[in-house]
Image 1 (cartoon, helix red, strand yellow):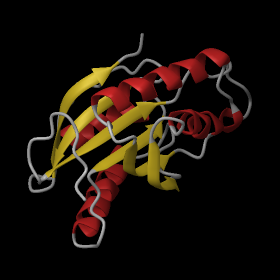
Image 2 (spheres, one colour; image 1 turned 120 degrees about the horizontal axis):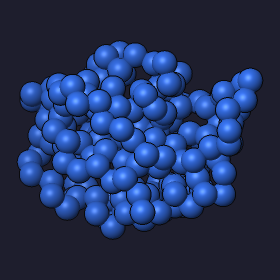
Image 3 (cartoon, rainbow, N blue to C red; image 1 turned 90 degrees about the vertical axis):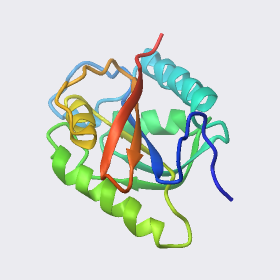
Image 4 (cartoon, rainbow, N blue to C red; image 1 turned 30 degrees about the vertical axis):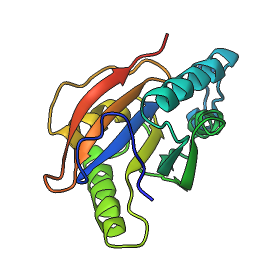
Length: 175
């Protein structure tokens, strides 16, 4: 069964959704344990509804890569009420100071290896942090615009397997 998403142009293209976590508590000594605020939960819920209405009409993605930080995991939990990931991986490399090049290469390798398997990856959600999400979009698209991400915003990238490169389709910035 093939996942059909609005705007999908070819069998070579995959949709990547790069999302920043929702609004979090004020900084603490331990940045990893910061939680979402009620506003952050609402932002994540609104973003999930938008994503489901425009790109994930079947209510699922094939893979979600989620930062191990509490606010990112909570954001993913909220999104999961509307969009379920067939597989979820906590990824230590998608933290604020992570390497966008390393993660871009990992995503490309992961997608390529799945292409030869029983279940290709056609849609992938990344839930992470600023400034990492901005740099990751640049790395995936081979551009250097360093877009700002408001909390719970989502960059939609159409990724070409054959070109090993993405194209920014849209950037949902919330309400």
